[in-house]
Image 1 (tube, rainbow, N blue to C red):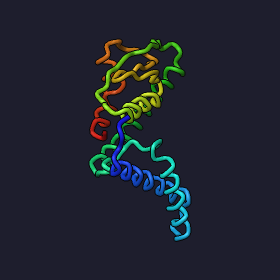
Image 2: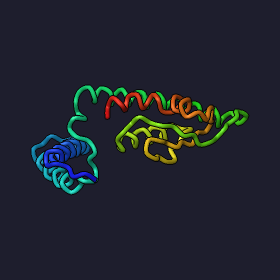
Image 3: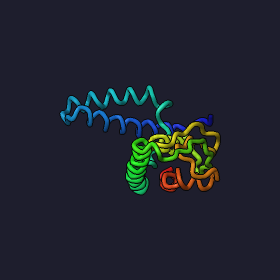
Image 4: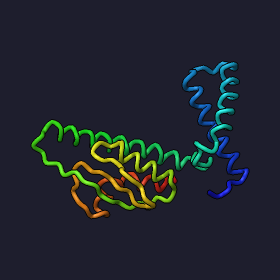
Length: 170
């Protein structure tokens, strides 16, 4: 693992601290000075202790363009989630519908481990698909109804809508 510079470490610490402080305020639902001071101290300590474990992004992730695509990604994900839930429910309620389960292999253009993890989790969270393994740029996905074994066509069916946006975020 490459050694991070002080500036990168400090910016990741600040980003982590900011995120934890937002969570603190959301949970306490209080803007009293005592609550905020305690929150600043507690979240700073947590950030210092967890900086190496929980930070993968720099403050650049907070630029308005990336935030826009994160929100867009959320809408695309929710749409895919609804459609796949309806498809799986239809299959459960209509046992005569054929299913063709299997594992397909798709390749991704995403380069960071974090972005691949987001893609894999998005695929897994949509019913009917489950990411089984990630090896380099290849994802192995269990699919409830394999329509094609061609990696490019399977990619278009399962992951393309997610990856297009993730490439603009990461």
